Length: 539
Image (cartoon, rainbow, N blue to C red; front, side, top):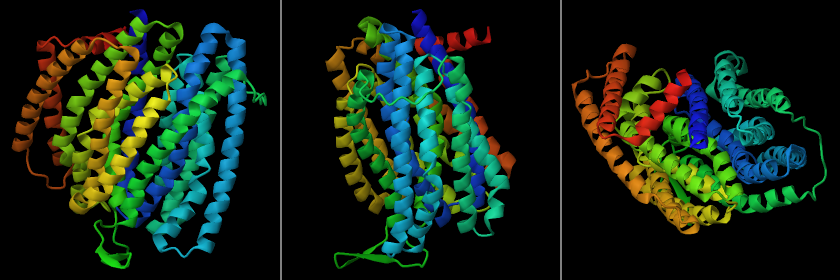
């Protein structure tokens, strides 16, 4: 029971730090929306930033962390710190070599491509930005590795604060650095790219003192025949394959948003196999997907990813000990808490999507039309918030028992489904179709993974999860009614900040009060856990 309370405390630590990061990230996006709106420059930057993030997921916090934490935890539990530290050194050395080679190869490729192929202006801008943003891969992947080590040692504070450093750097850079890059949006955007690279360096630098305090000083080790490293690699390979497909699919959303959008020259159609086809999207589609996703990521990052990050080392510890009773109890509690927060978050975002965008984004370069398009994207993304959150916990449950193949197989199937839905729905819902495809695929994925995990580990307690979910749905229904009524009586938006704030904050506050009040009356255990965790923190 004490360890279960500890992971909730750890989740709270990560959540609070992530909340700070998300708030700063929101400020960052508000500033960027005001400067760049839904322009072609921001479309290009979104792609140029997503590509290094793809590799971060492959070689950093995605595959490496998922494979490294269970093996490193097992070494700590069974072989002691000396051997565990050696595993850190040899893994870090190999990662550094791979990343350095990747960055050099990518920089050469991005320089050569424009000289070999005839590209239009939007793709030339993407490649030019990539020359600056791609080295970020080196720093952010090493940051993710340091975070995996510290999380395994149950140290969550500094790793969770790393994104805060990036957002502070980003905000200061946009305000003070970008004007020096030129007068047009297409030149100023290079200032944002430069800030990303600087932010990666700072994130890595702040991890070093904490690692040293834990007794870890990195020294190159070329013992690539280390048995622990071999196990990590064997676990990583299927994850890399699965994440590569998934992340490429995520990246394809942005590529589709640019490729199927009307170009700046005003052409209305494109030709495919001799057939003239009208463009289904407008310029800015990648931008509104980005802005909508950023607001969706707020509850997902604060609660879903934070819970998964905190609970993963506990899953790994119980799995190493073969303590399946505590594993099951911890898993069920994590899922119940995720659904307790994720379901009302989904509904709340659907209801408050327009006031959210009006308050945070609609100013200067971000127009009323941009608000409408972004709100539509949020509507469809929001359907799957609870599923996005729960998937992080369930996938880590598989990883903790060193089963990396099952999530990959399911993920590959969902990628195919998502791509088909993308190319189908954009003709009816424009960029909203890309968001809806993501939500549908995530929901189906979570159902399949939950079923397979139950069969693999014979996880019990489904009745408890079902009862908890019913209570959450009832509380969410009353929250919905309360929020809907408050929205109806709010004054119409007139562009003033005060009115925008009222239109969001009053319905949001009353909705939250309604949800927690009904949850209290229904004697929700998840509410008791969260309250006890906060109360313990204050003491």
